[in-house]
Length: 305
Ligand SMILES: C[S@@+](CC[C@H](N)C(=O)[O-])C[C@H]1O[C@@H](n2cnc3c(N)ncnc32)[C@H](O)[C@@H]1O
Image (cartoon, protein in one colour):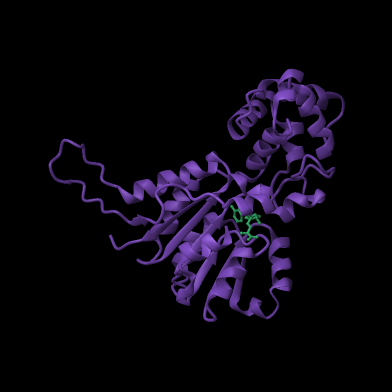
């Protein structure tokens, strides 16, 4: 949804923009192309993505400052960097196609590779640690809540049964155990690979992707100057919900009971929503990039309180 991002950011203004999720650099490139004076602060948890970006951007890399960090640290970083005053921020959540298609990263159930799934490979527990070490009830909760997998109990039991004799090390091995755990009749009806939801759950858990998301959106926008814009792209409802909640709350923060004739709490709106319903990708984009089919874009402008 690159064109929508450029439009919602109003990137023709010439100034500093933040790409909170650099990935393959598509949004950064588009923002740089929108105005010769544009500069980008490009953040990603994946150091390899930033390294590849430094190379592939060529001379344009001079207009980019790369930050290897979790985007949840951006509100703090921007508060310290009064030289930046961004005109817009884009947060394109989830994983990139580059990460998904690299078997060594362990995100893909159709490719065999190590069970890693960390966005930041310099730190933290990988997926193998979770599936081999977590107690069964905790594993079941993760698969149920973060994968919204109805058959979480069967899947977690199958994982725990299997790991007793042989711990998991590879994606293909884990995917096959998950597939076999789903009842055959259900498997036949499914439009997606039976391992999809469990892999999503493990990825979210490994990277702790949902913690503090609503606070992040609130803090990020609160720290922007009036007129600056923020664009969020989520790929599933677990990510989209906290974004939507934070934006709605900032648009209508008043906590007074409806029976009060005038507002007494004094809380003022901090944003203007640029789209009331999430924007979805055009059919042509979904055709050329099926992974984009579930993207939901929400955009807002910081207003003076
Ligand atoms: C959907 S991709 C972004 C694609 C990018 N917009 C492009 O045009 O190529 C998401 C990227 O965000 C990164 N990411 C995910 N969660 C993150 C977080 N909490 N902090 C920083 N980067 C994150 C991932 O490593 C990945 O590179």
